[in-house]
Image (tube, rainbow, N blue to C red; front, side):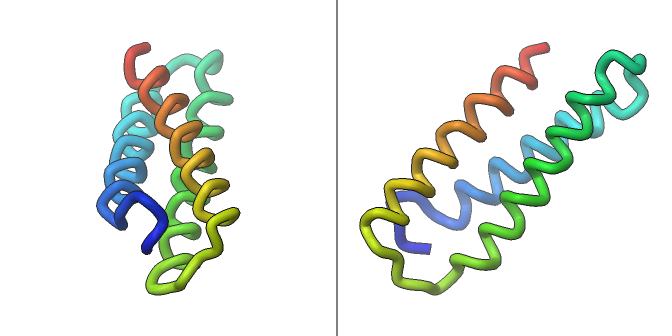
Length: 82
């Protein structure tokens, strides 16, 4: 990927999403929605990693993906602190 962050950034976000999901897997039902959302986020990040690998991206798409990456990291970091 060539849009201001590397494949390693996506891999780190995917790893964090999976870590959080595993921590919440046996949590009470109140956390089921969080677990489901984090699982979905992990799948989306993995799909994005595959879809945009080795592609030249427009500056608009680079900016959009950077915004998405920042948002995902914010959610995952907040969830990890719970």
